[in-house]
Amino acid sequence: MNSHKPWHLPRVSNGLHLPKIYFMLKVGVLGAGHLGKIHLKCLAGLPDDYQLVGFYDANTKTVSKVSAELGVKGFDSIDALIEAVDVVDIVTPTLNHFECAVKALKSCKHVFIEKPITETPEQAKQLIKLTEEAGVKAQVGHVERFNPAFLAAQEYIQNPMFIETHRLAEFNPRGTDVPVVLDLMIHDIDIVLSMVKSNIKKISASGVAVLSDTPDIANARIEFDNNCVANLTASRISLKNMRKTRIFQRDAYVTVDFLEKTSEVIRMRDIENEDDPFAMVMDLGNGKKKQIYFEQPEALKTNAIQEELRSFASAINKKEDVSVSLEDGYRALDVAHQILEKINLNLNVIA
Image (tube, rainbow, N blue to C red; front, side):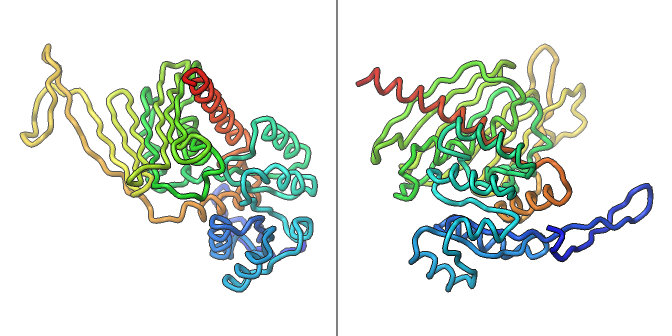
């Protein structure tokens, strides 16, 4: 990495501006499908963080097409690409995540890996161990963590006690090789786990395979030790798209629309006198009243995928913790598999 051209970013330390050297990271992408092309475009748009070296895809027709379209070099093999870069961005089908990540980590390369982290929780555990042994950084692409609406609402989310999520999508054959829990619901599983700082006590779930061979619609109820409850619904056979999360906590109600990238906060506080005649006041009886406040946190107009890739480069250069760790990816995948086990159990009982 020392052979790369550094750039300098001033920082303040004890009142003095001291230069800190950052290195532009050579990055390559594994997988040039729909999402892989998006990653290639996002990386090309981060010239201060990454030097996009090229990509690899098993489909030679895809390589030729994408290379010509984006002007990016297509490599002949995974090994050749890994050898040429510092960071490997894995955007292959989930089935190949583990194999690709193992190759990259054994070559001591930093790894960004799309969600779900691997096929099985056991594979995810192995990647965690390999990352520690290699002494490199690895981050999972749970992109909703970087959704501007969620980022804007985060400061208002404190000790949630009931969470309701709906992630509905119109049918698309792409992605139906895995259950809707791993395709869509896993986004919300990760978001819920990031908000609730408590162990899981119980999981209940049900689902139905309607158009494909695996569940297309599913519902899960997650109960935590701190008495928080999360109710998650995911469907890929809906007539409309929806990605909404509602968070209830003491004296506050927060909604996050991940699709429209907006959020709203409704807060309440105790009052004694109604000084403002236009204030919205709720009479609770026994002389108790609460005033209701509506807020719409401003969401920055950012590209979530680009932001997660930028954060990864920052973590590497600053030697800081990544935003979404392999442990986070493992926990989300483990919960997803527990949900699938509950669904399969219920389906077997019905059959």
